[in-house]
Image (cartoon, rainbow, N blue to C red):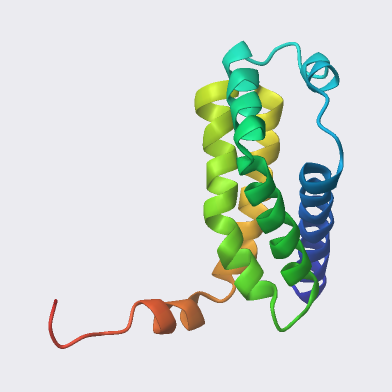
Length: 138
């Protein structure tokens, strides 16, 4: 189980470090980007162009890079995996509802499943931290 955890951590770290660097430092070329996926709904490219034009992709890229780096180190990988849950859900839902490109959906679902494996290995710790029993409801 330890080896599987290391492999998943480094796979996700490499993926998100690369995608973060790509969004932050590599120039965005819409024509190359759009030629890669002919089966994608054109509205996805409009959405992506909007994210690029507003600078929001830099925010996403920063957190992809940051979470990827957190996944590398044993002391911080759980924090990185937990922080990656909403980011990966947004990516997955973007492809489900906007691009509708099955390859992206499958890829994002697999990555989300791998990340969920990392998170749920620490279920007891996370439950004790976030779901503390309370004597009152409010």
